[in-house]
Image (cartoon, rainbow, N blue to C red; front, side, top):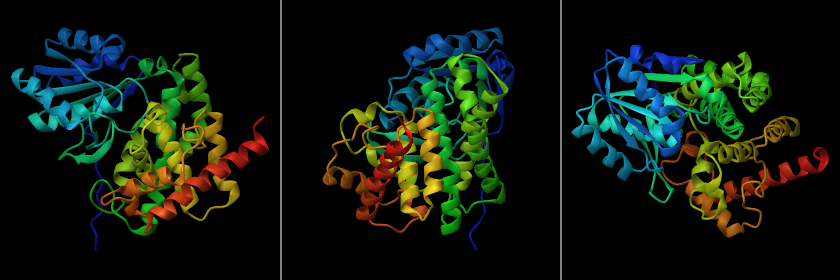
Length: 369
């Protein structure tokens, strides 16, 4: 019998101005830290982190993230952390920065502190990184022996991020239950290394319920740059519920399709992770047996949040069958998450990609002016 496995971060803290207390939360982890953020995020939150650490008598080495979560970038920053004798690695920013911070912490055997500046992915809580080449092509998942020690989410900072990023996080989170339920039905393995627990299943399903209930209100809250109960609910769904749900529930076709898209060149690379996952989710639904009403429920929700639902929306309007087959072949390569829930060929996946595109175009013709 397969083992049931559930994993999670040691502590999750979320709320308005939560960043002001970061020193209190990490003071027992060590007095030497390394803080990783890209150039833009330093002005948004990175400098605030350093200021709060200084107030708590914790030293910090500032490192500028170069933009790609690659093995080379992890190695570069690990060398800096080693020289600084840092015992705590703090990642501040978006998914790729946070994934890099987790890799650096693993390399130096340190504590991992994650500070997202947008609720744009479910990466913060997980014990893995998505590793790309320096050119942005998906290479592999990198797994770690533990989840982050602290995930600290300041919803004031989240509220001030572009609305597109929150919508992207909703799209990423919406894939959680769709993928988990398929993994459960198929009897596949989760990212945690076992089969889905009752807790993992419940959390994944709850994530979707919260997204449909509060997604629109949270999206409008971010447009106004204000923290509301709806935004707090969606930030938790995007980050904690989806994070636990995907890792201990399981990934399937939606994320494999996302990874497959990295095999193509062009404007698609300017889309966010969640935007590509949104279309990948529709492809998974097309691979499965669902009613028109159910599929259109997701299409309508995506459109209402300005998310892509057609090949044209993801900058692949004129993609040939040959190009889509490259995506399908990458999505079904050995070790991809699609195999957790499906036994399909690249040709079947390509058909589903074109089918999802047609379903969404048909819906738009009927409902969108």
